Amino acid sequence: MPKIRPLWLTNGRCSPKIKTGTMTMKPSINRFSLVQKLFASYAAMTLFTMAALLFALLGLFSLNKTAREIANNDLVFIDSINKLHDSIIAQERYAGKFSILKGGEFTELFKKREAEFQRLSGSIDISRHSNDKQALDKLYADFRLAADGLFTAQVTDTAPLHKSSANIQTLLETLYSREQLMLDAKLKSADQKESFTVKWSLILSVTGFVLAIVVAALSIFNISSAIAKLKKATHRIAEGDFDYDPQIPAGDEIGELAKDFSRMAERLKVLEQMSLDASPLTRLPGNIAIEQVLTRRLADDRPFAIYYADLDNFKAYNDRYGYVKASEVIKISAQLIDEAVRKVAEPQAFVGHVGGDDFVIIADCERAESICRQIIADFEAEIVRHYSPEDLARGAIEGVDRYGVERIFPIMTISIAVVICGSGEFSSAVDIARAAAEIKDHAKGLPGSNFMFNRRTASR
Image (cartoon, rainbow, N blue to C red):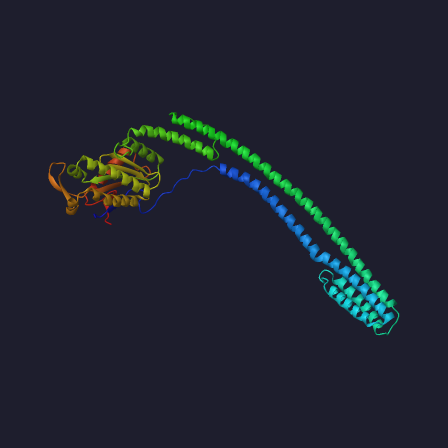
């Protein structure tokens, strides 16, 4: 395949290798979009709903924690006090019966109750009832000492035993009363928490529900009225009234959509004017559109590149293969140039058909080399399909040049002249075309497919 020889920029302000210049950004106005408004509104509704749910969950957690504390601590402690009370009364009864009847079975019953008392006393949570436990152990030690005197027959008077038992029962009753008061207070507090949780959960839920209805109603009204206006604008534009204004205030997506409708109408108006100028073969915009785009680019005062692509040895091909095959080559070349530009260049890049085998591309200059290489690669891969095997084997065809001289013409190639248009460097499309024609003459004078930037060559 022929070599691609790029010619680099010498007097422009932007090259395919180095990005120069800065992009001036217009200051943006901070406005809430429709999505942001809906998001903020529904976020508030969600916040109220989540707050109600969280409030209810926290209330349930607090109530559950209180219930567990009551079940695992308070009720257990109260039950233990009742059992201790029953146990000490039973021990006093068995010790008194032993002092009278001297039966060994009373000793065994006493010991069983004693073991029960010790087990229940040991199960008391020392961390919560340390002082109570110490007082109970001290009084029970006095009771046990009085009982041992009766069982060993050292004493016969049961008064000390009764007194020790009464002291223990008094302590247990005090503990029971105190714990019952604490339990009542916890239950009352739990009832208050339950009422408070239910009340505020309902308030937050209803507030969120009402807010959702209000937001939905306002959003539906605003959107439906704007859509109705846009629908009317669509009908008016479809009827050819490209200057119709839907009169939708800016500030959100619908306002932006209305602006897009207006821009679309302006664009349709331009396209309607340009449609008569489009090439009937390639359907690419013609000279009027090219001039309009160039004028707009020059007025924008930002660097850009214009590419002039020309098919080499096309006349010889047309003479040998005929008008139909030549027209097919033109059409396919237009398609692959357009596809290559869409593949590499920015979305706003422009592709036009000057006429015959000449094409124009207007795009940013940063990707100029990539655009040229893509076009050349695609063209050279495609053009070999349009020659006969015999001509491809020879690598050339016979023909007559424009001066009537018989010559050997190589397989068709493509030359691209690239003009970098810096700020204020060219005053009109005519100046650009003159510069591009000079560069294109240099490119076409070299063998194979080439692309050139200004006048200095550099082989790849």
